[in-house]
Image (cartoon, rainbow, N blue to C red; front, side, top):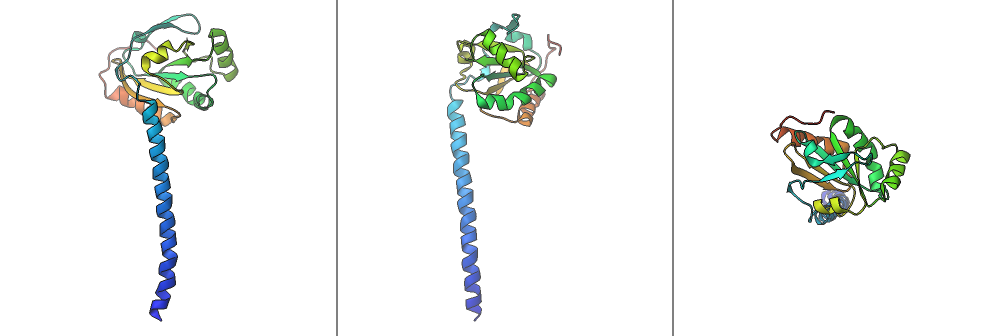
Length: 190
């Protein structure tokens, strides 16, 4: 009799255990797939010293990467046509209040088209470069958007991320870049 009582209990536990193992395996496969795609997207991205550039903001003022020395910089590539970029707009807007942020409108049309989009989205306060021909993106190896690069105060790329990322993830990376790099006085005041 004792054996009969244990048999149904042990067989009912096996399917539950199998379901959990299968669920765990599915999660691991999905995670491996996502990390594989991200690694492939980032394979051509520049690392080390950030490529210097001089460009023009959407408002016509000249901008140089050297202007951002001394403090960490979020260099954020986005596009008007990118639905994921729209999801990150609030995060980027919040970060502009606390950190140096430079955004690049990647293949989003000319200055007038980008400005129209920015006004519609309420992001016209972003410091933005129009990269209609992808030259700046190409110099950094950017192939997809959104792409975020964290450049430390010395001009070194510390982190790069392709795809959606969280506000706290970007803040943590900016903090890390500030904490673990030698800081020099910034020529920019915010």
